[in-house]
Each structure stands twice: as C-alpha cells, then as structure tokens.
Length: 143
Image (cartoon, rainbow, N blue to C red; front, side, top):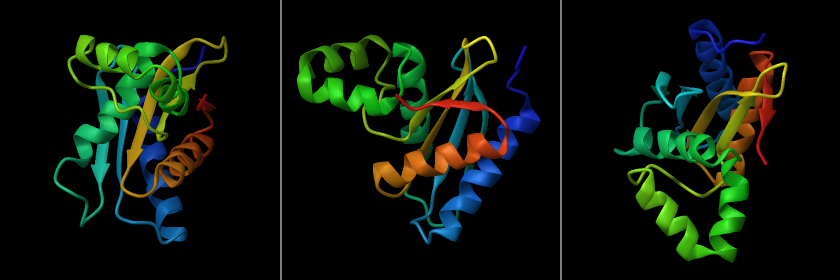
C-alpha cells in the first residue's frame, strides 16, 4: 500500500520548486496534505505573496474535500457557481477552485493526499504539482 511519507512530501516540494525554477516561473508556494487534510509539508520560495500558503492549502484541501482535482472544481465553478460557493462555505473557506490542486492516489486508487501549488498561472501551478508527484513516484490525479 502506497503511503504519503514526510520524505515523499518533501520530494514533491523540492521537485515542484525545481520545475518552477527550470521554467522561470514566478515564486511558488507548495503545500502537501495527507488524506485527512492535515498539512504534511509546506515551502515557499523567497518573494511569494503574503497569503500563498493559504492558497496552496486551499487548492489541495478543496480537491480532498470534493474528491476531484481543482481543475474539475474550476469547471464546476463556471457551471454551478452557487454550489461551489456553498461548498467553500461548508469547508470553512478553504477551497480554491482553480488548477493547481492535485489529488494523490495510492496503488489501490484510494486518495492518500493532495498537493497544492500557487504562484504563477494556474496551469503552470498544476504543472509544477505534477512534476513534484512524478519525482516522488506517486500517482497524480488532477481531474
């Protein structure tokens, strides 16, 4: 059974940040949450905006809360904005419905955590999350 260890969470962060530097993206914040939604690890590059931690956590927590990646939440926000607003309220405001929140799946397809990345465009944030998960040998589910 695949587990989200601290070492893997740190690998996700290191690789996501390396990816963003390689692509010359804006300064990033990366949060990794376990399946319960508890913060496993977080890092922010120098120069990130003040609330990047909250945004990264919100992308990951929203994905966990709804069982889908934040790209899907973005589509739902366009189609059913009142529903996403209600869910955001129900989860204490910690739901950011834009790409960059990616579920982490175990070998049995169960959700074992999520990563949230913020700092550049949402598509670039998601790309950094995917790079981090690939480097950690974990299965990403951005949808």
